[in-house]
Amino acid sequence: MNILFICTHNRCRSILAEAVFRQQADINGSPLIVRSAGSQPAGVVHAESLAALERHNISRKGLNSQSWNEFEQWPCNLAITVCNSAAQESCPSWLQQGENLHWSLQDPSSLPGDQNTREAAFDTLVETLQKAAEQFTDRLRQDGPEAAIDSLQQFGATLSTKPSH
Image (cartoon, rainbow, N blue to C red; front, side):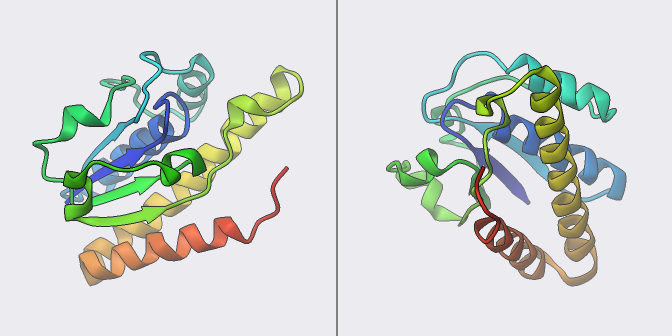
């Protein structure tokens, strides 16, 4: 199964999701290929994203900020937008060939406050994504792709019920 995480700038949330899901797939031996992209990529991964991954011992290898156009020929089974602005954009038609989900994840880099506040927000996001990835790979292994995708849809629904900061 091929999963593409999408965020407008592909520098924080989608990058973190890619890294976390890739690691969980490796741990569980899941046949997942996980990538991330942006509609208007920043061209560089946010330094605090990389630092959060390092704090959680998650590989940063191969992570880069790239356009979703680079995946036009890639067989995407599941596309997940992780920011509200990307969810409101017109997606390329090729992205609509598979399943599409939306998660409303808050951008930890945009939070006001000091360095410690932002670090905590990045860490919380990584931990939240780890729970979703673990549940997804477990369901994929035990119950198959449809049940696994349902678990991600349920995860997304819980995000919309949490109050925004």
